Length: 374
Image (cartoon, rainbow, N blue to C red):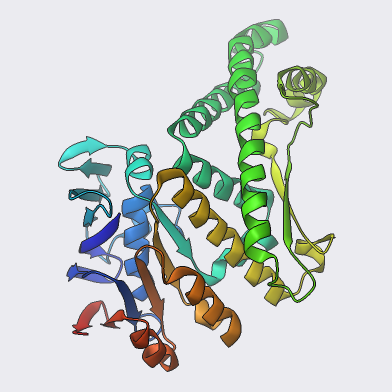
């Protein structure tokens, strides 16, 4: 799947934009703050239903506008068919997704369009909390399998409902016994969907680990390869996590009553990243952490490609600002033979190099784009 036309209305600093994208790769060139990253964000929105850098749609709306519109026309690499996607948001009415003019959901976008984004902020996958790594893991899982998406959604719903019963005062639940009775059906669902999510995450991390080993074997000058392992909130032996999860929930009952929320389950999982046997988050240099984050995203792209039989759209934002010349050239060599790349940079020194690699050039200035015929 590749994007052949992007349309924006009142999105970030774009009042109106119609951008045709011909066959091949594309370079967005402009100074910081001109709107390059906003274009990548819009494409990510079309592929996932959400922004990779903002949690609220309201911040994506142009100043003083009532809402935004992002539209895209995609073309399949394997079939002679196109797909039209539109995501709109109104401050007064919320978000709507349409696929070929029919109402859709974010899950439909994840199933139909595959995007992988690269940015300097990806180093958060190494440096930040477990929540960042869980979100990354779940994005890959949802891109690879509709069933993973269903299990995740059902688990999140069961956890919300169970936490509501924990948070409610015993007065409204007719005392402690009443609260426990109200919680039981949600506990059963948490165990059911949580156990399945545990299994699927372990399998996904095994896939990620194997891919990362191949990608990063010789990248760290004797320090690699990068090793990734699953760190479940509830460890278990064998193939079925359900018995261990049941025991963990029973053992945490008193603590949950005290704090008012579910304390154990897949929502507390983590992923361990090690380089040369040492924890990357604590002992890795900034350069090693940035390189590792890039390899995590390359592994995501490889897993998506293997699962769907086609390369995802790669959205690359200012990677030249954090990678040294050799690492940047190696990155380009790895991805340029793949699917469509949309790359944004302020580093004009790369213009000749990218033209030689047959990137179409688009100059971005103050929310307007001038495309150069190549």
